[in-house]
Amino acid sequence: MTKKYNVAVVGATGMVGQKMIEVLLERNFPISELKLLASSRSADSEIEAGGKIYVVEELVAESFEGVDFAFFSAGESISKDFAKEAVARGAVVIDNSNAFRMDDQIPLVVPEVNPDSAFVHKGIIANPNCSTIQMVVALQPLQKAAGIKRVVAATYQAVSGAGKEAVDELYAQCRAVLDNSPVPTERIPHKGALKNYQLAFNCVPQIDIFVEGGYCKEEMKMIRETRKIMELPHLPVTATTVRLPVVKGHSIALNVEFDKPLSADEARDILGKAPGIKIIDDPKQLAYPMPIDADDNDAVFVGRIRTDHSIAHGLNLWVVSDNIRKGAATNSIQIAELLIKNN
Image 1 (cartoon, rainbow, N blue to C red):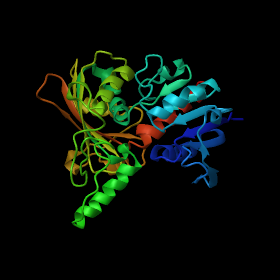
Image 2 (tube, one colour; image 1 turned 60 degrees about the vertical axis):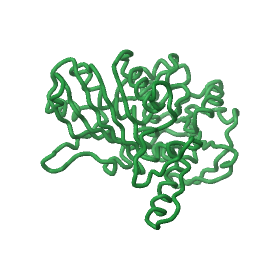
Image 3 (cartoon, helix red, strand yellow; image 1 turned 60 degrees about the horizontal axis):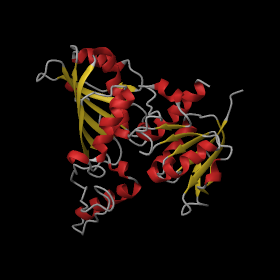
Image 4 (spheres, rainbow, N blue to C red; image 1 turned 30 degrees about the vertical axis):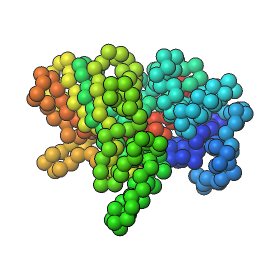
């Protein structure tokens, strides 16, 4: 008989939390009891999943009594306040926030890239940033084949990465522009920013706050997390992150320089055999991955694979993934599945 586990989803009413519930049921995760947790504002609300009605409970420390796996997706402050409470009560925490990602004592895991890191956890495992996840899934097979010398990334990120309220605002902006009405602007680049911008029919080259050297926090996450996950602490990585008026699905233009020669055909063959990757790459048929291809799909899609003739050993790639599924919910659940498989 398959062992079953008591599971809690923290932030169950948010976009990622709801997707976690959906993916848990879709993948037949061995659940004995499913507990949905959120703030007091959402307590006693109901969520239908898998033909059952679940009543959302208010998140308190005692919520984790008897819980085996706690999936957190309620923001950095909630994770810092409650993750250790969950661990103290015997749960394994898989955290989707930025709270623990760069903590040397806490593994940062993408199952297709560094699965063994999950097994050295001390109660908390961090789920990487959504754009980092799809990038390292594409980079790791190429690193094994030819050694990566440098990575330049430019992202084209969906508004759902900023939350449901930002998605709603984008829809409202589109209607306002088409109706020639005043355009609401509160959520982009982030709520409470010095200035907020229209995203509809526009793009905004800032995601999260600005930090050192004129980089924004999202760019630094990609740089630092990539080095940690791939265990290449000195890998030269640079990134520019841009918010687009796309609802779901992040895209990344990757320029990769290698230590050894690697042709586009060789890279296509390597990536086509790699776990978690789907190739869409046929220029003659105008076939390349787009966000609508990735919608509600767990794969990382790769296309536009071609030689960069400006450097000795370079390739360009276009990488697309559903930021809510593989970039958050599915990756978290795959981590738990790893732990279960290896007891």
